[in-house]
Image 1: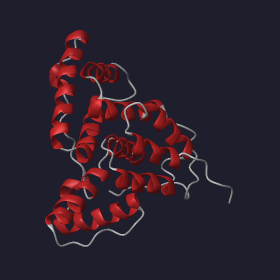
Image 2: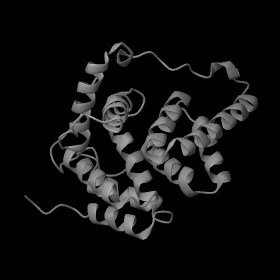
Image 3: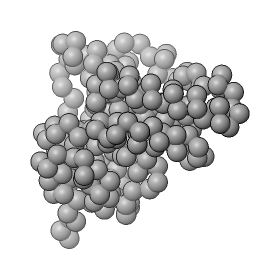
Length: 225
C-alpha cells in the first residue's frame, strides 16, 4: 500500500474545497482552539450524515493526533465517543456497531518493509528525500509510524490528510512546517491555490496571523507558464 499522488506541479483540477474537505478543516480547527460545544455539535452533525462514516471520523482523529499530539488526540476521541453514544440513543442505533479497526496489508509488513515504505511515502508526501535512519524519532516515529503507517492507511485520502496537517500546523503557529506542507501540497497537485483560499476562509478567525499569512501567500494563483 502506497501514498498516491495525482496531477502535475501546481496544476490541480480542484477549484475549491468539497463538503468533506470542509468537515475535516473545521473539525481540526475546532479541536485545537474552538469552543467545546461547537466541536461536539460539529461531530454530531457529521455522524448524522451519510457522507462520512464513524470509521472515517476515527481515522481523522488518528491523523489529527499525529500533528496535534496524543493528549489532544485523546480529548478528540473522547468527544467522538460521547457524541456517538448520543447519536445511538437518539437514532436507536446499536452502540455495539462501533467499528473495529479493519485489518490491512500494512499489518503483514516486516520492520524493514515498513521502513522502506515509510521512506517512499515520505518522498511522495513531502516531495523531498527521506531523513537518514539512525534514531528512534526517525525510524520508529517518522518512517515506521507517521509515514510508514498513518499516511498509507485507508479511510482518508492523501488530500484530506494534507488538509488536516496544514490546519493543525497553522493552528499551532508552526510556520516552518506549515510552509513545507503548503508547498508540497501545491507541488503534488493534491491542493490548488483555490483550495488554500477556501481553507484560509474556514480557519482564518482561529489561525494566528503568521500562519494565516503563509496560507495567503500559498493561495495566490500561480503565474502563467
